[in-house]
Amino acid sequence: MKHVLLVDDIQVNLDILEKMFQLYVDDEVKLHMANSVKEALLIHDQLVNNGYAVDLIISDLQMPELSGEDLFHSLDRANIFKGKFVFLTGFEDFKKEGADVYYKPLTKKKLNEIVDGVL
Image (cartoon, rainbow, N blue to C red; front, side, top):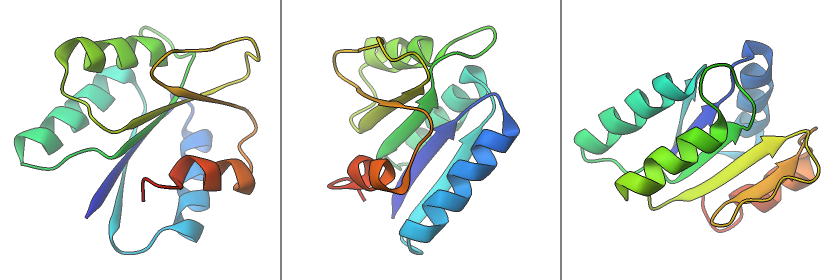
């Protein structure tokens, strides 16, 4: 089973991502959703501690308290995330080595690019 972690502080954005994913994934993909970086790290750690790998993380860039970039660096420093990391942002000049960056709004075509080769 593949595990996907969706991270956004705005619930409606998570709901939209979940619905988009449901069109493309089957029963072999488990979606996990977090409203904050702290919650995302907790979910990630629980999955890893139970022997599961997180195959894909899609995170909003700008969130209160901690950002998507903070999440990326926390996982990178701990050297525990081996999957694909994707930022969703409205900032068109943002780039991040080691991660993919997609600009909002996320389209079906962009979602296909993201999951291609991962799921």
